[in-house]
Length: 311
Ligand code: AMP
Ligand code: FES
Ligand code: ZN
Ligand code: ZN
Image (cartoon, rainbow, N blue to C red; front, side, top):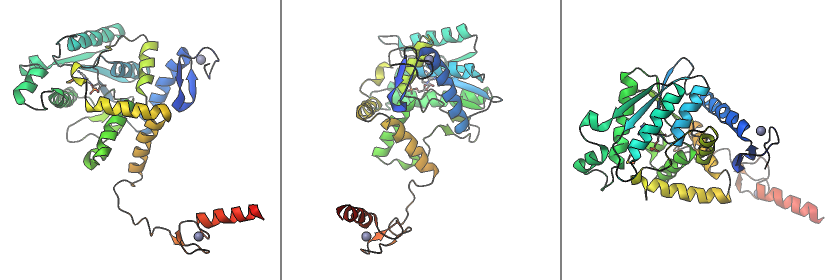
């Protein structure tokens, strides 16, 4: 595989885009694309103050890196969850986040749940009996709450998270399985500001997870490889695996799934009952069946061609 731009050895091959790039050109392409998405979805401007929620993972650290490279005013926020059994997940992700901020001379706000509220996430979860023995729902709730609180108290215009296409497609898939319309109507790259809550944006929502891994590696960003230990066996991981199987046989399926959803909603075609039968239909001039094509229906048109070929 060769880089499309310069012909040297490719670092990344993106089958879904039919595009291969060398390391140098890939490191240019990712911020260019991100800038396009920021403008397309009107996420924020260079005048606005952005708070990036950084978990120490590849997506959020790469997002921070990209926004700074693009010249945006982006500070970071790390939330210490106190998840440290076994692999010291929280300590390690905190360390990597601090290191990244220091190396690039960036401002990082740190909120520690235990210091702020008396107990770490796993204990809060046990005390409240939410989420069937797993702390994930308590954790999600606390993260959302703290992100909103810090953004508001410190006067940020925008809150940016590192959700990638794999994350968004898995959430969409889950919501579609139950037709959770209230969620489907809200899911997207931008959630507008509302009653003192900062606007929320996901600038990486069109990048595949493997594209973000390739970016972090090419940029030499040190990130935490492990997932949260509680994520194992979760529904979202299962949906990601399913979508990856689909993607293997149909490159681009994940992106199309997400983008067609955004398109359908934007054009108002989602959840709006229309009388499909009657819309712009008239009888075919040959067989009389209703058709949306002028004159002959598609079947009669096809048969005309068949007959013409026979003659
Ligand atoms: P997750 O829910 O773990 O997939 O993370 C989604 C996004 O939430 C990440 O890309 C980050 O932007 C943000 N995030 C997750 N965990 C933290 C954390 N401990 N501190 C700050 N932001 C986080
Ligand atoms: Fe919150 Fe796993 S429970 S990151
Ligand atoms: Zn190149
Ligand atoms: Zn017909």
